[in-house]
Length: 398
Ligand code: CUA
View: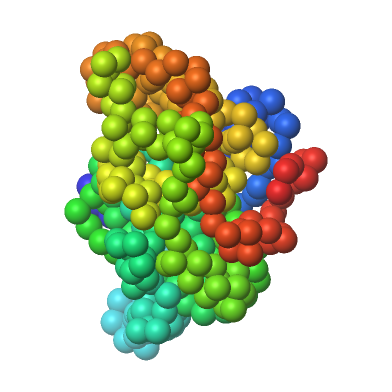
């Protein structure tokens, strides 16, 4: 497939799907939460400012060309109307001067546009060594954000599922890849869009001057829950970002008190319940500071601090409410989710009908209690007092 075609296809599908995604979200959430918009014209990002600067020149030049060609066309049509004698039109073959002009003008235009493009690419593409590095992994239908330079004291790299933290006022280098099909990382407020392709790692940089929570979506049709493959970008001022990442680095999942619901949740998370065929969660998920080191599903280390659930499908209070149905039967509330059911119901994963394991309501509640206990210290809550950019509706719960 030709790259240009694929690219324009992506762009078209993005525009075509945006209203659908909004409508789907409105229907699914009953409009009770704030909608958070995407803006391709957010000038708080140096990336977006550069693109806007280049576009102004390109559009201005296009207008000049359009006017020039239109003038030439109408002038010629008027001046050289067919005359009554049907004489052959004047020939300019051999008119070297005219031919040189006809070649030179388009060449100059193309060179000018090329210089503009190459200039912007040279500014936007190189990744400075000091840029904050984040590895972005896209999978059906969620995101993982890993900080390859921040080794957790408890082992492994600091990572967070579906909520990406970045510092303001400096370039952030994203290395984007996919674990299955092609997805699209698209958080336009912080700059541009990149395809996330399996077995390919592409690095590019984003940035923003303004602290805030930004919306991110998947921009490449990737399956049943393409519209439910969202994420949040939380941009924090440098000092707060550093403090938050330091807290994440030092974090170890709390050890539940013996006999508490959290303790039962911990045990189920780590071991599952083999007698009712309930698979352990640890096989697929990582929790920093515990033996759980699965990489099949999103990192849950800071689950209690996260405000979204199901890759941005629900937010705030709604996300809290949905945790129980989610644990019981994720594929029933999110089409195509690969997490097994835990209420014994059937679900389809990878084209095959499967039967989930069984946990009692008490056990599901215990799992939920354990997950909610996975909290960063209060001062490292990255949602606190951060403005939600582009929010509309009733203000939601953020
Ligand atoms: Cu992933 Cu659409």
